[in-house]
Image (tube, rainbow, N blue to C red; front, side, top):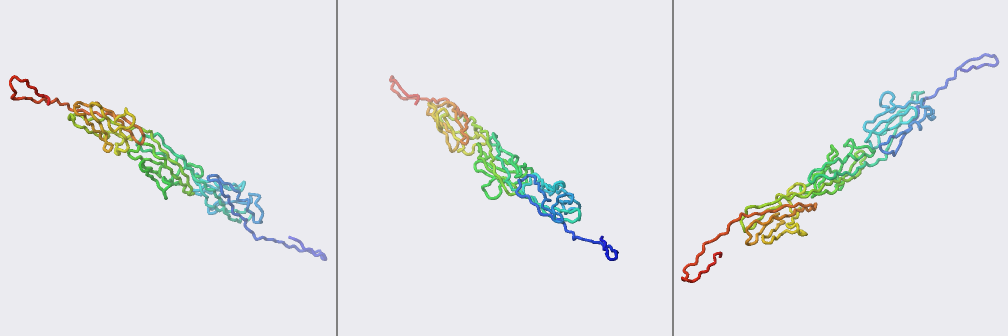
Length: 381
């Protein structure tokens, strides 16, 4: 109010001065924090670039209220985004911190907040954007050593790997594994000709190697690619499996009660086995030495005074051909079975017997000789 006084009369009058403002809302400005390290909390001050309705900076945080979830009634100073992480607003500093969920490795969805000016009740909305510099996951080499030859080997290839945020891979749906990076697409199985088959189990993270029958040595290491589904980035590692090599098994062979003077043939491989316990189907997997006492490989052996042994590389059979006039059992011989893939060997004995028969004496005669003259005749002929 003011008083108007007329100087000539001294009389006065009173009136009121009223000033009004058209209230303006505060100004919230978008905020961003870019290229952060994956998996790390991010803190940024969302108030520093905002202003009150009079255009001044916000110095006293009690002048404002921040709502991190405008879509929910009331004031929220925290917000959880399922599958991404949690936002928290600090009323003492004006900072918002984003804490990503373990395993969340990409950019979170931008969120909106409301800045409310307490004096007027008016508000303004802005966006918070956080980005990460995406890193690939980390695949670590895997190995399983000293396994039993011929037995399937299973190992978990994911247990030592990690997502791009450095966390362990807990949810296998976060990743994809390709067992054959050289082939386009995703392969959860791989066949290595002459060695065996690898299979990846998407439910367990395990790879199983099933060796081919007759494959008795270490398979060639293979590579797999670990793909992080959220980012599409990948990492490669190697799977190595080894076996404790065992020798093949040669079993003694015998052929009994044969007819004297007749050749004897027997298969010495039929009862032998490779180091993985399987039968010998492919004779190129092995080598036979009929005379281990002589350097090198001998597929024939002559036993003086008895006969000759010959090994047939196409059939696995040994034939004994007795010398003419040899009518008893030959001395057993030893052979060596060598597994070509490992170089390991085993020895066994070949025994051949005959059913001995007596000699045959035939009556002899020389008739109508001259009386008084000596008579000579061959009784053996």
